Image 1: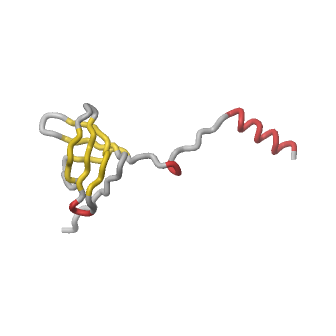
Image 2 (image 1 turned 180 degrees about the horizontal axis):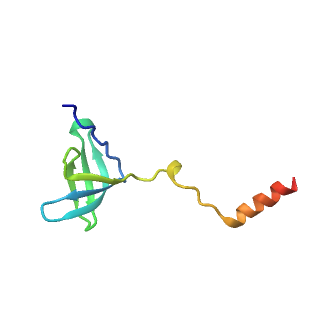
Image 3 (image 1 turned 60 degrees about the vertical axis):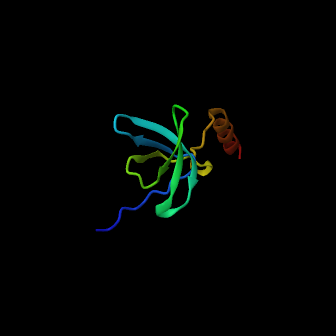
Length: 90
């Protein structure tokens, strides 16, 4: 049976950790190692930090850290109006 592709966690990723009686949400603050030996340090909402194996099935990626090029461009209506008026003048 083919092995499941592993997720490479990155600093800033938002994750959840499913414990026996609860679910904890947090952010990755440090990545140690690579590949199958990768471990991550997670800072949970309550401020506690814990090291978890990246291969732990209870650890799930919720959202990747937004990078500069992936952020949507914020548009200003006034700037758009000036651009349009400049284009019309030409």
